[in-house]
Length: 205
Image (cartoon, rainbow, N blue to C red; front, side, top):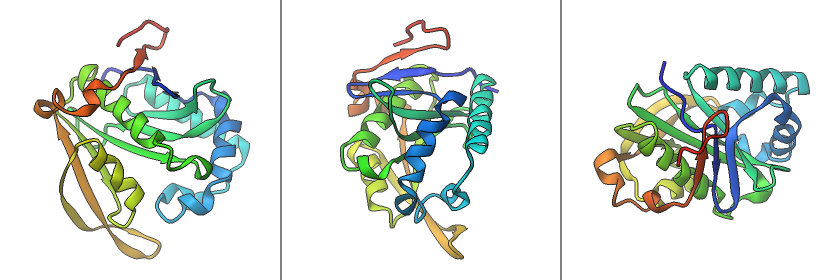
């Protein structure tokens, strides 16, 4: 178990925060309107559609794991929090001092820079609050929109893991992008303007 990072992060246009069960209708609207957009890339989208009760249970699980310091899954919201823009996370599955950032944006809000904006914010949180050694982004080489994010943010493409998993009945490769701690100070993410808060609203950054 690791200490939790920021529960709430504010950027120029977005609020990135721990999911709450009350967000289930917003999540449902974002996913239900985007299934054709998500299913080619996101394994979890193949399990859709879900009932509202299932969404509530899922968000309760996300919050529980966040509170326990096991994994940090965030919702991406509009600045007034009236709409779920997508989802992201600082995932712990690669080890204690590593965070993996994943992201998805609802179909009607793509190509507006929201994935890059939210990812840059999480990079700051990972290095400045969690004090990790390494941040990774992993994506399908065929997903050009997803690959554009680490490229834009100055990550290094380390290589391709061939036949890393099976998806849609076929082997799927995975590109691995990374940013390490001694590169962070000169990386553009370090200049991203954010406000970050803990679980009780005290400012961290």
